[in-house]
Amino acid sequence: ENLDNVTTMSLKNKDDLIVVLGSLSTSLGGSTYLKMKYNKTEGPLAQFNEDEEFRVQQVCLKAIQSNLINSAHDLSDGGLSVVIAEMVVSATDDLGAEINLNTNLHNEEMLFGECSSVIVVAIDKSKLFELVLISKKYDIFSQTIGRVTNDGLLKINDIISIEKNDLKDA
Image (cartoon, rainbow, N blue to C red; front, side, top):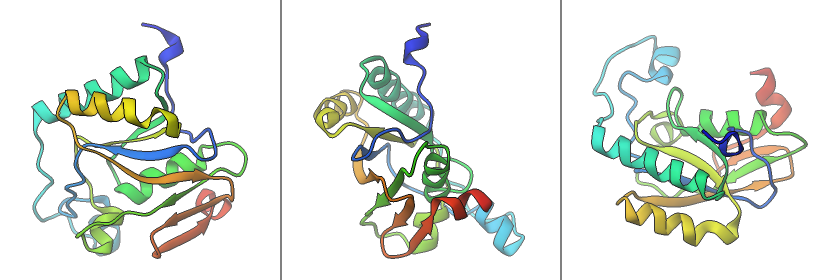
């Protein structure tokens, strides 16, 4: 394995695009959010498709090997808002993220819903077309949902605006 291909979750560059690889078909069933807020472990779980998971992983691997991806984090415990928060908190300087996601999901599902077969990546905007081509080759949906900022904030739609230092304390 080539250690030059190691990719961390930390955001690295202002103005990088934040892209989702895979379909955001989230569910609150069995989620960390449901457990923490309502002390419940119930509801329908997000669907898992082994073939789709493999293809999403292949897209991410090929893009990393092609030096397209600067940061990557799987969407898992806590959902999209937690993933993006972890990427912001682990970043150096005052890097933050501004997410603008159009979805039919309720706010709680969008922010905290969990699903498999999704990876959130940050890439230089000049490399977006190449990433989309790799995604299409593997029949994986990709969607640009935001960008890396240098204001030290995590912003998601008009729902969340929180300073990086406050995220560290959470």
